[in-house]
Amino acid sequence: MSVKTISILGCGWLGFPLAEKLLDDGYLVKGSTTSPEKLPGFWKRGLKPYQLRFSPEPEGDDLADFLDTDVLIIDIPPKAGKEGDHFHPRQIQAVADGLQKTGAKIPYIVYVSSTSIYPDLNREIIEDEVVTPDQSASPAFVEAEQIILALGNSTVLRFGGLLGYNRIPGRYVAGKQGLTTGAVPVNYIHRDDGVGVIRALIEKPQPGQTFNVVSPEHPTREAVYRQNCADFGYETPTFAEPSEPAPFKIISPAKLMGTIAYSFQYENPLSFYYQPDFPPIS
Image (cartoon, rainbow, N blue to C red; front, side, top):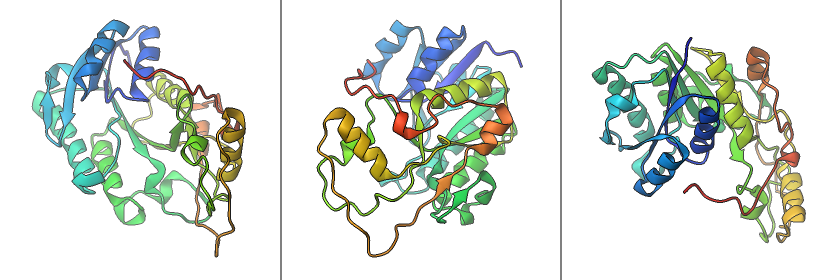
């Protein structure tokens, strides 16, 4: 597949640095945002900017031009929020409908989903264990995945907790008392690896596949929090034994690593690179 143009629907905390890397790789990159104040920064960096919102129907700039691309990366956060559980599947259906209405024939689509679809089974989990909404802890998110996979030219990426740079997990629990989930293993992914995985799939597409995107190692929350607090001077939280063990899940990235031979930059969340004063996107 010859790729010249890539469109990123949702140039936020993951999408914008991905766009920068793809620009450096020599692609023409189109990027969307819901925030008009970000558009000048897109122009400055070399992205072709679009102000687009799916609420859930598309609103904003020329959708047909945005969808005139070789690869579409959909990175709309799969959140339910105040709009209700089915809002995100409606957004994704609107994207699929937009492809049909505009006549866009996009060779390859990558959809960023979430490992929150997995229930806590107190063991390691692989992709095939959740393929239908009734198997999921977040049925609506699986519905969204099914819409994308039905297009026939798509890959679903189930991302773990995206961290790195100014997203430091210990920052969010600093000084808290009596945390009872310290023994729970984490399912994190560094942003640089998130970007790396998507770039690898553009080079070697895997249509029809679903992959977990998490670091191969899973230290406990307590270990991560303590290290972050020690490294950055946050007040270390205290931990308490729960009345019964907290439920957990360990998400396996083995399928991803075996299929595209991806080598993680950060295999262990205890070695993630952080930069507390990392500037926001402007």
